[in-house]
Amino acid sequence: MVKAVSEFLLLDVILLFLLVVTSVSVFLLRNLFAATMVLSLYSLLMSVVWLNLDAADVALTEAAVGAGIATVLLIGALVVVGAEERRHPRLHRPALVLVGLTTAALVYGTFDMPRFGDPLAPAQTHVAPEYISQTVEKLHASEPAARGGDYGQHGDDYFHGHVPNLVTSVIVNYRAYDTLFEVAVIFTAGVSLILLVGRRKSERRGAA
Amino acid sequence: MSAHGALLVAGGTVLLAIALVLVRALLGPTVYDRILAVNALGTKTVILVAILSFTSGRPEFLDVALLYTLINFVVTIAILKYKEIGRLG
Image: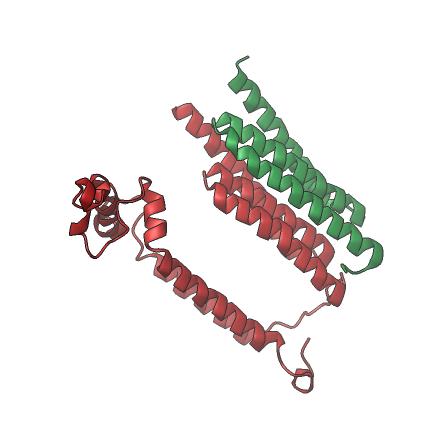
């Protein structure tokens, strides 16, 4: 079993090395068409990494969105802007400083996070036990009261105990939070997009 | 050689092929080198996913490989269409 783990780890190391090579070369390539091609390769390799991590659903999404739709969209952008990058040697210093500060703040924020797999992390001591108790222990109690279960006693968590799979139970029961923050992310992206490209023609003078 | 060992050797070979194709995609002097590299790497990814699914004992991951094949086809068609007529529509 230990041997099997090391094989998958080896595959991960090789794939991540190839990912670093591709992502760095996307920055270095001056031909935008070539950069799009390499970005498509990046998504394909990344989806294998996800699959290697047993995240088949993420791998499917990465392949469909990253390698499929994103590549076609980028080619659509190439139709508009052309395949050769215009040289912009000028360095925008305020933007550089802002990005640097944001990066520093984000890196500083990671110092507060618990170590990976730490059994004493808040997620392990507070959240996970609650989920497990809601799902596993009430499985027997999930029978309706008419059939002898004590299902009626849990007024506040109507759905709990209906799903034998722990992950499915959490995903189904807390779907609303998931959707709420997804909507927030999509809303933010939409507003940013409107601010960036949705300006009227008269205001667009001087924009690249 | 056991079946598992054979799969390992096959996986290593495919990874080597992926590295070579990646070199071609990065250096490739003409556009068609890169298009061919993307298409070939898609195929190699499909093989790698198939090997991975059998090595880890979950042949149902083959569905993912099927999806990759379809996406690879769509992307190649889109790229070639862009190259031929200069737009996607």
